[in-house]
Image (cartoon, rainbow, N blue to C red; front, side):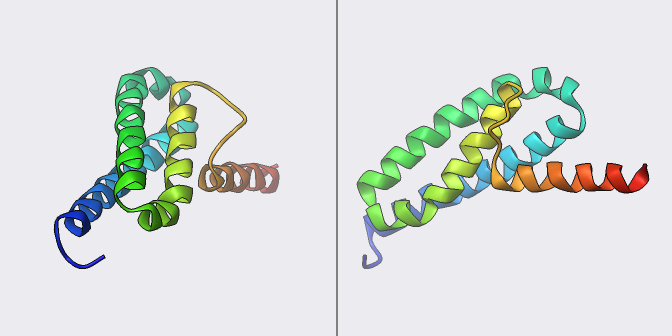
Length: 110
């Protein structure tokens, strides 16, 4: 898409999606390390989830190719945000890696 309104708008959407993604990952890792933070981050994670779903829908309408490229990242973010809101076995790949690293470390420490 040539630089213009649509191009700039999809860039802005992607930039905000990236910011939410980073925030979701950091909060989910914090909750993993300290589950008592779940209640601290719950409202913020719900707000971010709502915003992310809106941004994803707008990006899909505006620039389907960009949406397709961002879909995995959006999915990871949503899984992290869900994990923040409630304990679940369904976690993002990146959070799963952190869990596995912690498990391996605790096995080594024994």
